[in-house]
Length: 126
Image (tube, rainbow, N blue to C red; front, side, top):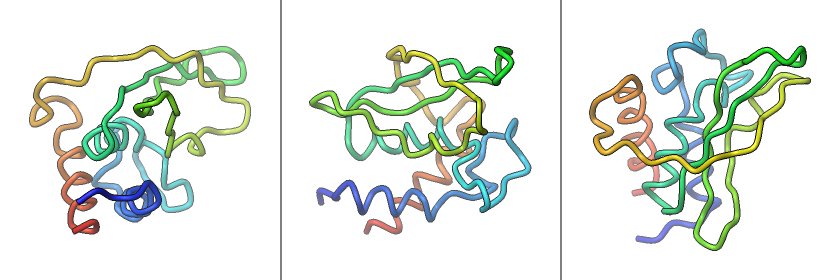
């Protein structure tokens, strides 16, 4: 069943939690629900809508490295970034590069968080 972008976004946003957050961004809070959710969210969006994964370096206002940010480029070229609002004022997301999806999402640093989010979103959409 093909889901609308609005349905996918809603299902993802209500599924974010501490259990889906990147451990480096804990503690998680609903006050900044998108914080720590970019990697797993980009994978789930790709599962549902296809397209490419994008990654860019994020810098603090003083120019020091904050980390990296992931989002999606959908078929047709439109970019979809459901977690951009997580960044503090002055933090800058750099120019993106296309990255290859991990071959096996059941292993790796965020495997549990990805599976938790993917299962929660799937349950909400079906």
